[in-house]
Image (cartoon, rainbow, N blue to C red):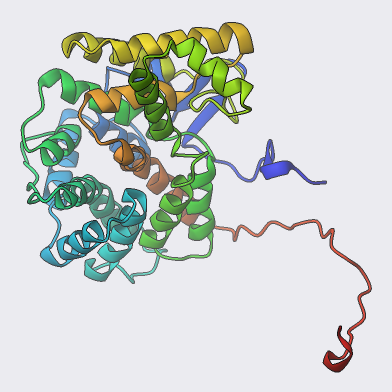
Length: 376
């Protein structure tokens, strides 16, 4: 029996997250996403996924302290980031390389992946430093110096601060924090599966996250939000009605990015929050047109095609309004999802079995070798 892309194949058990595609539900460790959005900080998700429960105030403060201690990046890795920026490398390719390079300076790098405490120390360093690396890479390619992280700011606030060089508004920080919460985990998606496959070989933690980033870089996994924003910018530049633009693209046989999902048959439960944030930021910045373009497209696609938007659709304009460069969007996805990836990696190590599926052979049979001198 075969299944295209392993669709609906149950590989193993997990306590991380649950999706119901028919009901449009997303659950983290038993908590519906609607219970969490706007109500918990991203630092609390670290504790939920890695320590199995939401933190007390003391535990929350400890998590914030651990992240603050681990966010700074050493000069050697910064030099690598500068070289990648000078080479005009794609941000996701740069992030993949930078996460791999962190292993060279991690004191626990080659400690056995069966050492649970060492794995968590590595996880803390990787997740904390990821936002620093993304922001530094972007500033270097703009000819600017990297901004050092501020231990007084949240994880979300630090990213916006290190990227833009100024402290974000309280509202911008809260919105970005919610974005990170919404993207933190999503079942056995391609990048999570890639991380778990690598972990199942008992490779190191840095290799698992490098594998995940490689999978997330793909256009039909993590790259869709960048394409959505490019579409909105083209609509604005051409001065064309958004619905006419979509009709034009569909008539040409093109896909409208940000719609449809491999699991959800109804609304993606994260989308309404991102739509709300898009409107809120648009009103604050007097740039409501991105929200208006997006809602027009969403209404048309739902009414005429019966297709609902996914998490990528509104996250595009939210990130744009937060001043994040378009080609960094997928790295933001990674900076959030790394917490889920690492939780899955720890889960895989805990009761490991090598992931080794089979492929049904459909190639030629009973071939006979022809000597080289007789080959035409």
